Image: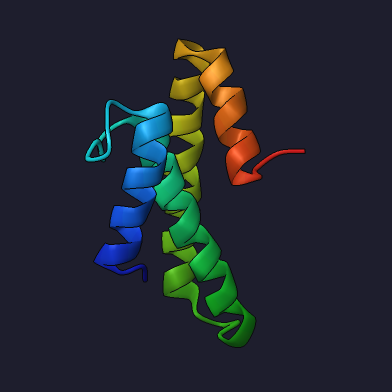
Length: 92
């Protein structure tokens, strides 16, 4: 679970670069960044809680949502898509 302060930092950082401003939490790129942070936190959670199947379902839903948002970003602007995945370290 990420805190409101962490979310605000992500929104400010990615909102300047990919969104309309520091408070733009609705743009697809900012939503992808927030989802990526939540996914990474859940991956760490599964290191010690292997049989947490309810959280595993939530993780899969978040991954699917992130995949759809990334597809949307890629269709609208390929340059911002490439910059986003490079900054988040999603693909090699």
